[in-house]
Image 1: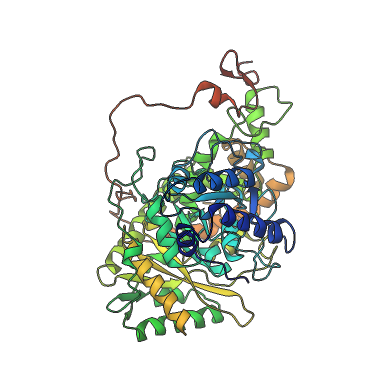
Image 2: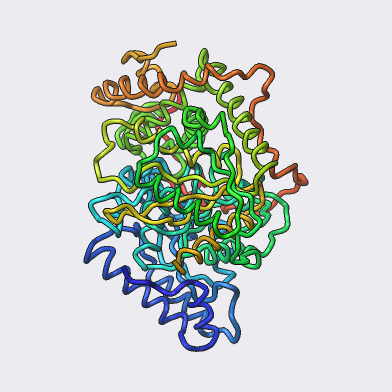
Length: 479
Length: 98
């Protein structure tokens, strides 16, 4: 696969006058033409915003000085992040023709920093899935092996970066939807602390878990994007009014003195032997370069899957009540009463996985089951968070595989959704506890499929996990 | 608690969720949701006496002053409506009351 320049290098080349924003933008669009719709037809993009991107790049080239730290750098956005005047489908028939009347906060911040948004990427419908196979418009394909999925739900964003179409992309992570596709495509993906990045303009799935974050070719580029998109936003009541440190300045290149915890008992739940081998080798490499690797216990994380799927679906059932055929989106024709119109619109507009999750969430919130399922899950969520708090009293970061298996083939899990849910066991914990986590590549299987591992950090301490991720990347680049 | 769901259970939940399901979907979801709920029941074994339900306190207090701010114009809000009356500035829906 073509090794494309980093966001940092592109920005610096433009600042030095060696490149223009226009020619960098045209390169990205040409690459998309070559590999996305034609060629291997990876289908990373749901919508390519070629005209808007070129106009934006031309405007940047007319400026006397750089607009900001991403001046002229192309970026792709998951199609559940809205851009004013551009269709945002969230992978659903329900929103096939929805044109956003406003910009997400991350869009405003990226553009103020000089980034050039080139398009919207393929994702599982309303971000529900692990493969992009739940997109109503066809899945994206893994550039490493196009017979396999790129992971999901932000699979298209991962493909855009992994296949060198854009150096950067944004996704959203509710239960692993940034980290898992990053791992399966062999790139870096960061889920920030809940509240670090405004969710204003992110089409909601599960509001207590959703968080926007970057995909990049390196931890350094991910840190650069986080600096731009992080920070308080009064339009998202859950965004934190806290200072945003320089994440790039935290990248010392060394893990010396870091205490890294590995939850070895949790890993016994089942990890593919080749993934386990790559992970163990990475832990040894970190230990040899000055980190202290210790065993920790996260006893309640064994229950993270039922807790996550009860709570995320309960929140989804409420959030997706808005798709009723009245104010925007699809409306089924021919209904004679408003209730018939609601039922028919939702029955036709949502795909199977979204229906399944709305049903599960409705059940968990319904009379007679609320205490046993929803409330109980919220209590266990408290225990999961307490386990992390206790662990971070002893270690600076927690290390574990991102996903128990490498990229799987299309259609492999169609009949058994539960099998796919269970595989989220390592990713959902960070969402349930609200803590940051970054997935980095840590080798490959014998068949060449990428393996990823993730560093989890204390709330608001993206700096430490990015430092570890960057140091590990440099370690492997030297090896 | 049912470890498997009947088609009638699924139809009842679908009515609550306002989802029109096909016969095939009723059949499929009865099996799949039954499996998922059976799996989810294992959280009953976790000791949670005295444990409060999770509340995210990471971001702190989010109250703001009660001051009106700019929002979408009526025209912009109607632009995506499946059926709207621009002149009246309203969404149009099928008959609500018999």
